[in-house]
Image (cartoon, rainbow, N blue to C red; front, side, top):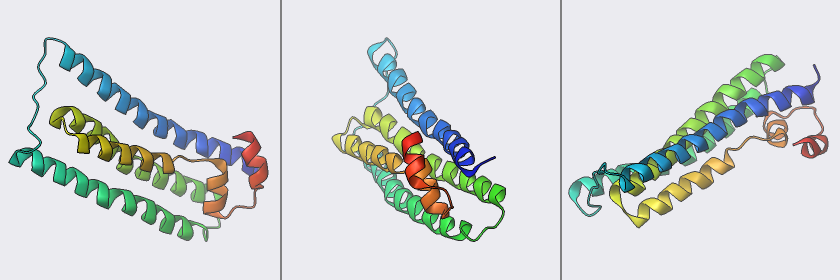
Length: 162
């Protein structure tokens, strides 16, 4: 199997997780929307109360740690993966690391969307938006895989296909 096809299969696999996270986020929004406008009352927490402040602080700390750490540690890991000689092992390790990075950042997005409705705070809207932007930077592409793993494939050819 040629390298471009392997890269295409790898990115498709990682894209499934990427779009699943966005789908779960949309599902959370729809469920909370239905609950808040139905007869079911969603318990809201005052964002200025001690509990609300603690929750928003913990969430912001999670974002401040998880996003840079996820991006930086993934980059460091891909630098180590460049030395791997077996292509199959290299792709499998890359895929697992990409899944982990997506879920670490994606959970921040899902929690942020839930906290927007629970806390009713504008700062949670911005923090959830930050998580969504960070998740966008984790989106895989064939060109990124070639660059990160230092493969011998042609990036210009991959740009046309993806």
